[in-house]
Image (tube, rainbow, N blue to C red; front, side, top):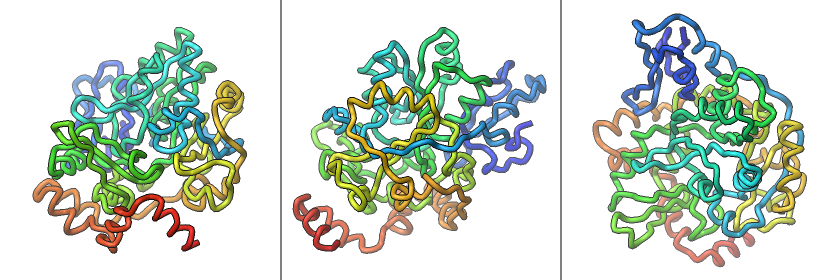
Length: 390
């Protein structure tokens, strides 16, 4: 039996969904808990005790990992794709090349309910909705079995997702495929759909077309935006003065398994690992940073060989992993985190009091009004002030 089902310990399940898809009699299904996170539920009358769920569970059986090869500072040369990306456009560089070779790409999109779900694209147009960060827990839907069908048919597939979702896929497949590429990212943890929905409802006009990491106002950074319901105005909120981003970045909203994540750290099970190269300008000056720079880690020889197919479309150079780790320590280190004391309180009060109350009580950053004033300044002013400070 799955560890989670045996113990009801919510830290024992990452919600990847591999167990649901592998179950032959469909005895398992995903159900939301009171915090809005998805966990497997068992129909004991249907279970045949085949134990396939245990075999594919990455929490119980993490896939084989390997030491990474090289890490690069990287930025797409395609200005439009770069603008729509959260950082340097690494996803589109790999994904475009896979599509152009007749392959398919698995990535995360918003559905009509503003829920993030994994889906499959086999055209360049289908990649656009996959761009940009979605800072909450996503559903894998049926993409594991669909990916297997494509691979068995000889199609090339790029699977992108959280580290635990990639681990779930690799366990689900149960054998290596030469025509599969996997890409994960340095995940900071995932809030629940309930938390995000509560935040959206607290906004003055219900948020539509929500964008985390929107470059439209301040370039590469932590600015979020959304369209008002009328669609006539885009509202921006910057960095730590956005209460949802503040809660996310401080780990107040994460799934319990995220604090003991087995899939972070230096060694990886995927072909590529990507993240923002925050602080790039401290060490290098080959790439301008206003449009965003990715740290692009190549973990396997297969990944390194495929990079030759798209490297001409990128500005890139070898970087030091230690430089990336200054502001992204998870590229080097794997460690367990303490669950913040506020976390349980926040989720309880989301349900009883709503987002507006917990925002005022728990999710206001220090120097809130000074930071609000800072973000109201034009970019050319803040850029000059940062240079003077350094």
